[in-house]
Image (cartoon, rainbow, N blue to C red):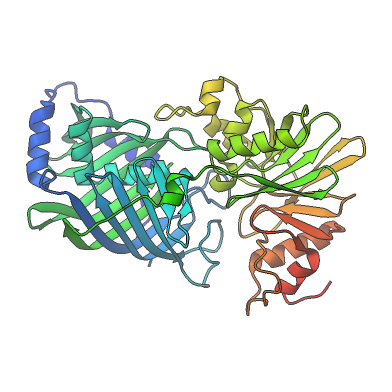
Length: 489
């Protein structure tokens, strides 16, 4: 299912909006406006809410090239259940790719759906599983979606002392309510003449983009008992569409119970190390791995993923491996947000960042964007990141240690996609091109395009690989990779 026409990018919406306050329109009274919006939408009478629909979207942070639109998705279902009083949200979705290129955990084009149940409450986030999987990087984004729903915006505005104003779009003046949920979102809700929220402009913190602009539009309101709710929700995040949902079911005061699991409440970032060669360690313990490489007087770290918390834990673990040798260089495999989310934290400690030449200008631009909603380690350090771009190939040589950085060609996952090869050790360090499954797993009926592409690049470059050190999952041999594509080397 594709939209009949693409949603406009964020810049277009902002240009249409005329975001300066209308100088000739009196500023409304905030409390009077809140009362009208509350009465129109029934927010005060609502403790919980569930809504569900289907539509299209985009995988935020997983663009094929840095700076282009997020990869298109089809949502067979998206359901959100909200507990306003507890500050909790649950989201369940089934989604599949609507285009070939780009990253994310969604199966490759035509190979099925990704199904996830994600939760957030207060300062915790997690995904369903046995046991539940902590997801601290998702806290702000999920709570943002809670407090920018029409009723959530009213409740947040009531709790956090909203101020009123006006904004205009296409000749129509709207009254506005601006509010901030500390550490989560700074937002302005647009209220029409009937008291309905038709749009929310918001900023949320993000570990790569810093303050991230979001525009959410609400239309086609219908009444459900004491409340009104929009039957269409459109959202642009970080300049590109992420959601166009046609709501099919709304249930006020649904049975919603969102309790933080004990293992999530007590979770901390854990880093374990395994020496895979002299002076080379695989740093694991979470969903994303890193690799520490010892040089003569410093360490090179391959990958600083996810967010500040993971970056701090990985950097600390690397320093403990070789006391007295600082992490001076961090190599980033590619620009996708899960793999780049700890780069700001690494830069805050003075590490030079190495990424692709394609991603370098993108990172320079977004890293200059501050995180004012929730100041991060880079903002607190006052440092300006030093970034080096790799075009094709770059070699780091230090004594007997040789570290080769190669750019993969022809990947459907990402462009500007780097892997690291240690020729003496015959080790290949890579992300997402190959994530090993359990040992002796049978090959899939259709070879994974990313696996095939990785083999093609290894052969093109003539790399003498024996073992693969993945940035997800376990160590594997090159023979295992070949077996997954139905070949022997």
